[in-house]
Image 1 (cartoon, rainbow over the protein chains, first blue to last red):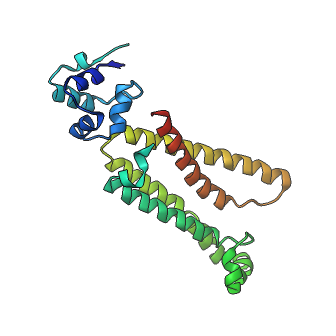
Image 2: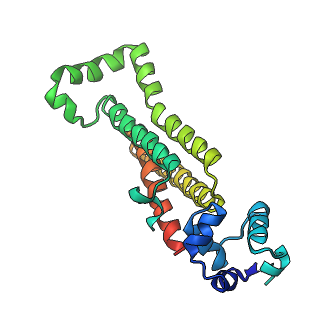
Image 3: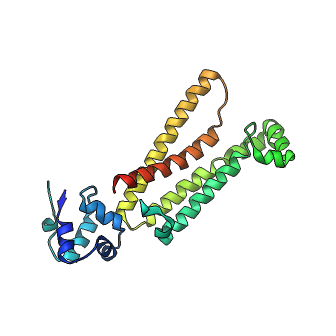
Length: 63
Length: 152
């Protein structure tokens, strides 16, 4: 699964720690998702979509 | 790597580490009750050596109690892990802890198999109670560190 989390985060000048705090997860989780090593669950994907005010398919796409 | 460093622990992780530490201490205590194994406490308290060396073989009830006690650290550790996994809100951390536990179980079973073959080959008993609990704790801890490292 590919994602544009890093770009979206950079647009908002958020650090990985900032995003992790907003999502209620660890910074390591954000890093693992950003690097594509870990695919988030549907509830976490929805939380990300709500946070960035974007549809899920804009943030995540198939490789 | 810093995920489970003491200063970064959440209160839930701190409580779980406390329970796992208690299980490790309990393992050490139960290991010391196994007859015929090196026991530094027996050097300090010679009476303890007599109790574990002679009575455990002769008294079936005491032997059964000691064998049941050796189960406690494993049960406590599994309960602590289950409780932690149920309460941990971070799904990524849950995933790596589950993977580390699976590695811990796998290595413990592999160790048991090797010990079983060695026991059959040499017709000698092996301290399996020590092997099971200690191998589980050590291999799970190492697996957790290696998995964390792989996500850096």
